[in-house]
Amino acid sequence: MDMTPHEHLLDYDPDRMLQHFATIGEPTFRAKQVLEWIYEKSAPSLDAMTNLSKPLRQKLADRFDLFTSTIIRRAASKDGTVKLLLQWPDGATSECVMIPSEERKTACISSQVGCPVGCRFCASGLDGVQRNLTPGQIIEQVLRVRVEAELAGGRLSNVVFMGLGEPLANYDNVTRAVRTINAPWGCNIGARKITISTVGLPKQIRKLAEEGLQLNLALSLHAPSDTLRAELIPWAEKISLGELTMACRYYFEKTGREITLEYILLHEVNDRQPHAAQLAKFAKNFRCNVNLIRYNPVEGLPYDRPTSEATASFQKYLREHGVNSHVRTSRGLDIDAACGQLRRKEMQAANAPVQITLPPTE
Ligand code: SF4
Image (cartoon, rainbow, N blue to C red; front, side, top):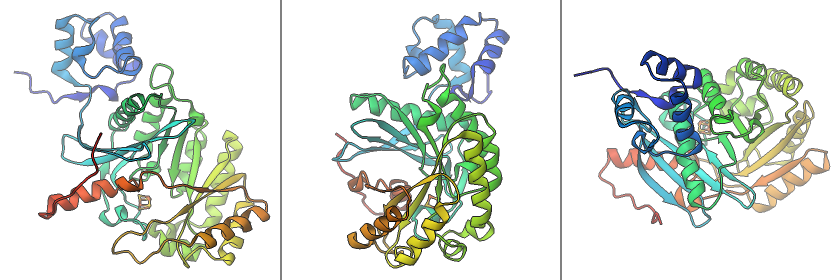
């Protein structure tokens, strides 16, 4: 009996796939057919690839798995947002979300199991990181969410790396997955519709600028000064705003893509006018726009939601000082859509005899 561990078919790009088919003595057009089944025809299994002979399907099934995760929770929000909790063969779990709006259907996906950054205001950061997700596991999340977009009567149009994990700390796997998500033979999603959200690793931002991809870059800023940033984001202790400015400028020069600054407003921590003034000054360093996000309190953490007045006057200040800014609406609040919350509940449930009640899935 062949004891070779199964491989993840989604880890194979056309070159590897062609090579494999040549090795097993199959014509190379079969490799193309398999790619079409996966990415164009959304085949749910190897068995569904009906223009391949049964013996070939069996040969592939002996070596590969197409999907390797199990959907252990599916939570659907009243606003149409659907969140999936996936479990991988090693028991690790990841979240991915389908966020619908009138003009687009967005997949919000994770790049790591857990998150190593440890932002003080984030529940997920408390648990640390377990491991990187592989390219195939990242792509699998997109394919799972694509099915949800189709069930909601649309087509997946955007992908954002805003789930769990720091994408640039898993650089090689993330960029390999991005190439498949972007490729015409793959998920065929334009680079301008793919966003990498990072806490800001200057070296990797420069490297990404040189990939020849026009990805959107979102910098999780959250504080307009080095001191406050280091208080909120432990990783920021070693990364100054000066270094980030240089890296973001470089990114803009190389790609022509405006940077998005993500800024979570925390009541009386970073939502006052002096903060807005510092942020406005910082934002003048390169071409960018600012996304303001009102914090949703997490039980056990000492941060509160900013008032509507403070949010409005913060945004007004930025606009009056020439900074393009928007207040982002929170989606899927009834299903724990903030990053990592569903996974966290599941982990807590596994550790304690607590009954978790999730909203109905239909
Ligand atoms: Fe990680 Fe994002 Fe949470 Fe920070 S806010 S700890 S980067 S998941």
